[in-house]
Amino acid sequence: MRQDDDRLAVLLVRAKKDPTVWVFPKGHIEPGESAADAAVREVEEESGVVAELLGPLGRPQEFQSGKELVSVQYFLMRARSESASSEGRAKQWFSVDEALRAISFEGARQLVRDAQSALANTSGRATRE
Image (tube, rainbow, N blue to C red):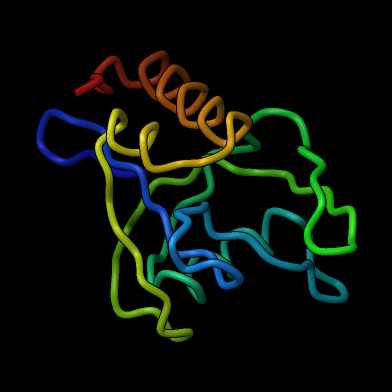
């Protein structure tokens, strides 16, 4: 996430399997890598955004990805700098309300709400648009 003037912005990328769907950046943990380190690396690879890790967001979520059941731990991050994605994926910054409309999955929408609350509690500046 990032602060754009007086509003909070949420980063989403196009899904690899279905580019009509907006999702959070995510990926696999490499050998010897922590979940947190993997999250920071995947955000940079998929979006070109270098982010500061603020902490885990919610409990791990499980869902089907093709034939595989995957478990994903999401993390709240604050964008520090941005360049083009090394993977060439489309990315977009959304207002909170736009992100809630763009995201297809309720679990992911709840993460946006949780992140907004967490940032509002820590900074007092996060506002909903």
